[in-house]
Image (tube, rainbow, N blue to C red; front, side, top):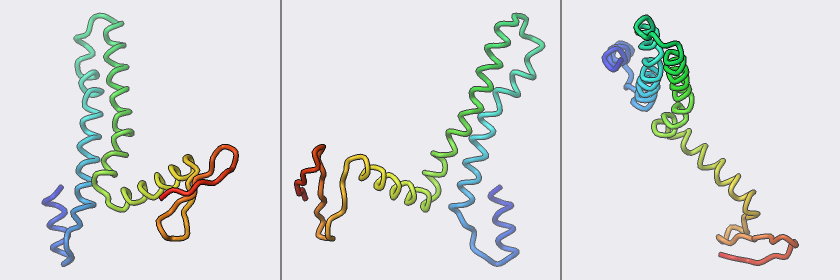
Amino acid sequence: LIVIALRATNRVGEKIKWQGLMTVIATAVVYCLSVLPTGLVQVFEQFIQDPMLYVQFFRAAFTIININVMANFYVYSLTVRSFREFLRQKAALIGGAICGIRGGGGGGEARIYGVRGDKTTST
């Protein structure tokens, strides 16, 4: 994939975008690893004599496919800077809403509202 991307960018005369390339490669590797057990179960199903053992292997293989869906979040978090920044902003927004913290007047202070609504100022 890297060679193909390098050739394509050289033809156009642009620089290669490593962030996008690494995201694609990491996503493809995780996908291939998650689909591999399913293929192995299908190849070796004729050698598995016990039906319950086959069902267990089959379930495990298809469960591993779900790892691909879950792993995409981590792949994007590790490789896409804008996605990490988006997550930071949303986490700060949600964390502030959960803790009841509201931004102050720009001086670095935050007002924390208690259960009864009384204010205390912390820095």
